[in-house]
Amino acid sequence: MHLLTLSDLDRTINTNQLQEPPLVPSYMQERLQLLVKQNLMGLPVEPILNSYPQFKLWVFQLKELSPSLFLPQRKLLVDIPIQAKLDRIKRGVTEESSSLSPAFKAIQVRANVGLVKGKPKLFEWAIRHPVLTWQDRVKLWVAAEFFELEPHKLQLIVLALHPTQRARKVQFTWNSKQHRQTKNWLETAMTRGQNEP
Image (tube, rainbow, N blue to C red; front, side, top):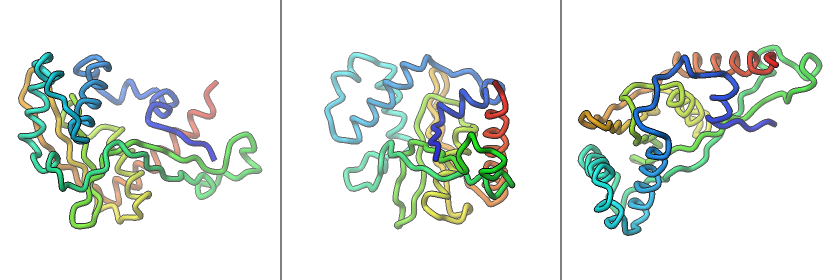
């Protein structure tokens, strides 16, 4: 078995043409993620927020968009690894025809999973555009496989922050067609990535 992450996929399939440039440098995104994680764990973050007004504004906007995320009794698993197998044998690739690569790969993503009435729901907060990205599609595919859910029972809530525009909360639903298309896209991308030098 070969384990791939979103970063591996980004390098393997050259996704630059699939996405818009980031709104902020990656270090700001990483700091925001760490700050929110610390806040959700109940650690004191006020000194940091008081020193960095932009982060203070973003955390305030997150709390406005989804106050229930920040309640102590919430059932939210933050930044947990989930994975799903991408079985290549079903696509006619066998060990005999591809002896150098494993029969299947596992795609691993890190996700924020809320349990709403006992059912998983994905949450994403980031400095980003409020559109469904290829990374979101992969997370939804992996989550449906991991939790063994019918695709239409899965949702992704995106809390999209922006450096100059108002924050937005967008809810994306998932369906069997999108699930199948994403799996096919992953399989094609993996095959293409293996054939390139």
